[in-house]
Length: 213
Image 1: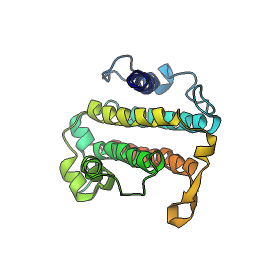
Image 2: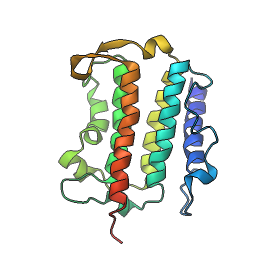
Image 3: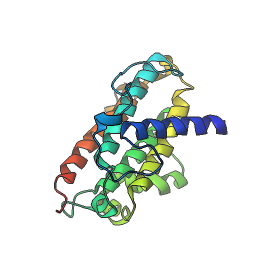
Image 4: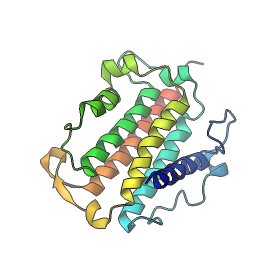
């Protein structure tokens, strides 16, 4: 199991690194267009080897979105990642950790079939602050470089990939009451994780354009 986990983690890092033009475990300071070096399969949404058709297609969308998110922030300094437009806004660093927290909680809800918020106090201690953000998030999530956030995102995504590989299309179509207590399948929940990254990527692009000169 450990070797499988390492293989999955390698896949996540390789995909993200390749997609944003990085060939080592550290981010390059050189400017580079995403289109210069990204994997030729990045924009081919569809089934993936090792996954059921719908699960693999969803993973391809999630991988593409993650590449775009990392492309937005890959060259930012600690100060830029901590920057807030005003006292009520979230920093880009906080939003990156929020993305990891969101994915972690959907893992618990869908893979472990836990009702929302019923996870252990240890899980809550690690992830509640970035999940909820707000004043506590603005106070506590700061001072980290981009590799810190990259590692958190990678570690969580590795779990998702490991668990996706165990599941089939019957699982992804499984429906239970969730959003507004309406029938919601696992496909919808995980598509929400993907579009959630798109939403925050737009916010990060907005903040990035307003960084102090």
